Length: 237
Image (spheres, helix red, strand yellow):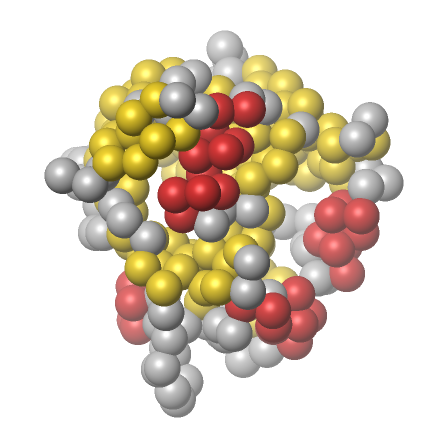
């Protein structure tokens, strides 16, 4: 088994998360704007409808895992598999990967591990999660400025939620784009059409979200009360 040394600690592969709470919302955004945002990666967005890409906003409470406990927020886009061509219909979106554009966290160890192991674009930020009620809220600040205040509403239970199809996450750091194998097992999953409210602040990332044409309504929002995850070795593409 491969292992890596991070801040004097040995981290084995794959890295495992034994318990996390995950809340997310998927938004249809302008494909041309999203394409421009991630052009540095060499990847292309997957268009769910002509002219529309998908921006994913996610916040996570990592409660037990190899990288300790921490809070995280993610801004990501559904992307075509590298080398694919032609239109991707809705039925083909299951082949899409997830390109992680921005990934603030609130702890130093996971910051260094995420950057060095996989090239994740982790930065330190102030992430306040309010998860005790059915309404899940994330207040994200960076450099003393509000990025966003996001509320995910409770949805309906998803019957039979369990192991999800393995996903490919994609990252880009120091001029290198990487593929990261990623698997998730979910318990207590709920989904709600629309299902999210968001207020943007005055941080540059908030401006970037606004320029994507982020609509008032999400496509849908999900919550997972207990998620297990596994992250494999990154591979350069």
